Length: 199
Image 1 (tube, one colour):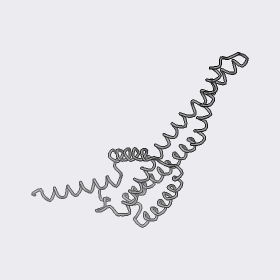
Image 2 (tube, helix red, strand yellow; image 1 turned 90 degrees about the horizontal axis):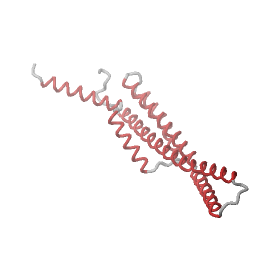
Image 3 (cartoon, rainbow, N blue to C red; image 1 turned 90 degrees about the vertical axis):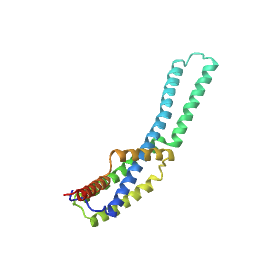
Image 4 (cartoon, one colour; image 1 turned 180 degrees about the vertical axis):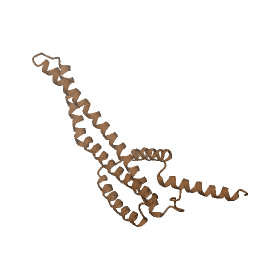
């Protein structure tokens, strides 16, 4: 308990805010990645299935005389696969969801480093001067990730869902800074209770 500071330094507050933002960005990009993967599969599976069906059906009936409606149905299915293939190529779902996943992992690395540095500070291993240097490095990395993330847009709906998940997680698993605030408040409440109790 002696390592609990009387006040949480602004440097730690800044680092905790960076941790929070990095986690929020991680959740946003991971959710966007899942959505992009689902779209990729939604377009890709029908293409494969229809092409297999058409290829095997028409190959087996190559010499058979087919009614006109089967020719038109086959042409419509071929057109549908071309359309789905064009949509998949134009929107490049695979590259998009892989990019979101990569960016999300980079934000996760920033958040974990923030958590590690906060723990080192509270354990008395790292002082504020060294911590401020580390924050400058983390901010530069965070800025670089933000610039690369501009290519991978997160919709407002996905962002709001990520924010909801982040808030729920924060309630279930308070950050180290929140735990320290809680311990400090308990310590102060115990002092008040001890001083108010007659001897």
